[in-house]
Image (cartoon, rainbow, N blue to C red; front, side):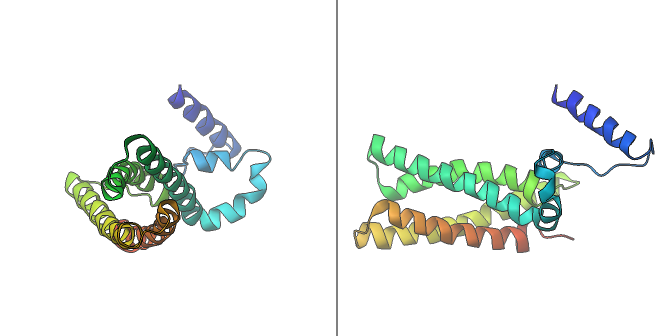
Length: 175
């Protein structure tokens, strides 16, 4: 059904271009949503800041997923904060890789070798920020006894900023 909707949208766009059969720019779901009547007033802003807006959107959803999972695991299983954080990290990194690669940074690659290089770079960068987050949790929760959720929230902000820089400048850099 999704393919049928894409074909219909492409046909309408072709008709809007005067029937020209030139290759049309591939649009993702967010490009199509911004054309809706109420949202189209934001189109110039969206086009200018698309990458940052999508990173904030998917970073925000990953942030809430991470916080929700951390709180749920803490409440239900009462395991070590460090182990809890690693479980949350695995789930969220998988989510982030596919959303960042697909929508945020246009991480299309042509070969399997490039794909694995990108995947390893992404997970390597995220592993670095996991270590940063684990250190923050170890020091401020385990050793100093600060409020668990406050420290987790602050650590997430630090991680989001570092992850963006690593993804933008290293993993998905434009050639």
